[in-house]
Amino acid sequence: MLRLDSLFDLSGRSALVTGGNSGIGLAMARALGLQGAQIHLAARDRVRLTDACQMLTQNGISATPHPADLTDPAALKALARACGEVDILINAAGVNLRQPYDQVTPEAFDLHMALHLRAPFFLVQHLAPQMAARGWGRVLNLASLQSQRAFANSAPYGAGKGGIVQLTRAIAQEFSGQGVTCNAIAPGFFPTPLTAPVFNDPDLAAANAQRTAIGRNGRLEDLYGATVFLCSEASGYVTGQTLFVDGGFTAK
Image (cartoon, rainbow, N blue to C red; front, side):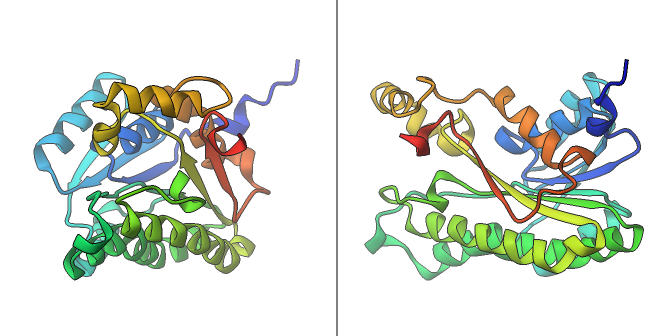
């Protein structure tokens, strides 16, 4: 019987995941690795990066750590060189300082923009031409509920996540004709270091769960299917799109 498993097979592919040392980035890296991809993880925290790679290795996944300051343009170029030929790029690195609007400094604002917009922009500039030359590539950006709506004390984060949706479209327009698609995943509320202030408040976490159509907050495993789909042959005619993996939070 004919099966479609090969559409989702990533054997022989190489993937770079930024922010891959914990949370959503690590979950997405694990999903790709379990489908056969060789994984490169990039993040600033060397200890957590090493631990993440060891965890992936224990799962039978080939994983290489790349300590890097993703806010440094020179470091982005060096990272691209160190990874070599990459078929898949996941831009998952991010930060949310959760400051009241009137307390945001220029330095804090610039940090959000550097991680959420500048790093994806220039990593694509460095890596996508190589993908295009081979006729195949996948770029997957990390959007957010705040790509569509606002939350308190998160204006710079929301601005960056709004921008990543448009950057996703721009990358798709630039490279999709050469076999390199670009899409974004916008997660709902998942338990990660970035969302710890939310999940540390049981009442707030419960309220967010009730706002979904499904009735619960996300589990990191809920991201596996969407990640593999958007990084595999299965999504070859999907580009420039943002997929909300939010349990129906934005549907209610």
